[in-house]
Length: 495
Image (cartoon, rainbow, N blue to C red; front, side):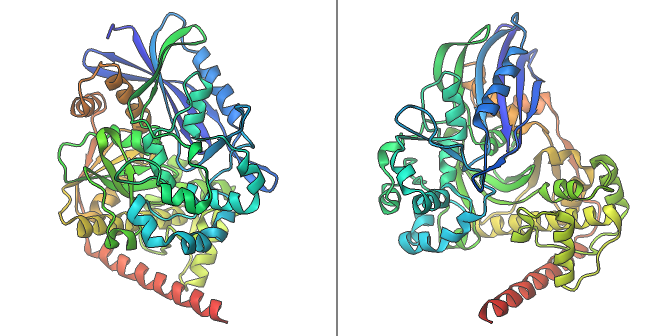
């Protein structure tokens, strides 16, 4: 590629987005953020919804900020999973897309599984059961708005829709489609028995295209004539594409609002042990699977800061957490009370009060409790992976925003007894770029793409520095607390 050639990546998180420029130069990948914007969901008609028009406008604004002198050759777009657009006869959305943080989908889980069979759904799709999965969003829509659903003519995940709005054909891309819990994990096509049982028209869907598909050539966006590429449009799929693995026994932890903990695999694991542990098998690049579990992530600390006016900025907050004693209080990071609380501070305090724990002191103590609890969630999931897949992990790649939190990285190494390779920070954006580079023939294969990332953004290595026994003791204590919580909840339900 000429030294002046530029690839653009649009990387959307659940509430913000960025337009990024990448350039290959002297064996390294340069990375430059062009435009960052907010895109939080808004309440409309009693539901949280995304403003797709606003997101598109901001993307186009970002593209306009790329110099007209730049030789832009391609653009790819990735986003969060599960949320979608239903398109009507006129080619427009039937309504503003719904946000996965709506709680109403919990109400249809039992009836959906009564219809489909929980084990049968997992054996087919291999997808972790989460109340906000597309499957349950469809079931809730079918129940509440069947007439609206009947007017749908096409289905598009959020990145599918936005790439279409930028000039591409309306397709379904594989990595994001696999998150729906409606795609057959082995055929990599829509599960017809699920669609039939839900009463959903199969004609809404197209057979998913693979990550790295060139959707258009010669598309005009502002002053730039470029190719539109579907990378791994699921942001975690793009992030894992950028993880600089050196062997097949490495795990990854993609950190952000959510944390995704898993391994890259060449086969789906849809057995009973994986289902009982609630693991997922999402599609990745080159026919791989991301065998992982989705757990609450930095959301705990993000919302703690948001709900506590006296809470310092993230840097000082982490330093305060480092100074606070460990294991003073713990939480189940995936407890439903932390999903969308009015106040994270109040939700934490209620959890500690109900479980008979002493509240920690100050913002640093609260943040340390959240970090300790996240690390314990990491440990539990990594142990489950080793048990289910039958091999020992050699190291952990921790990527995304959390790799900048030195306390989180060091505690993860201490708790697991494994080296933690931290970085890159911008994993999803970099993965988006390298998949585009592969699609255009600028990088030969995935191994070369990963070497390029590692050479351009060398990871920081954290090695275990403390005994694991305090962590093992804390894990047993948290397991007891969770068992007590479950017993109390069950007893309350019976009353």
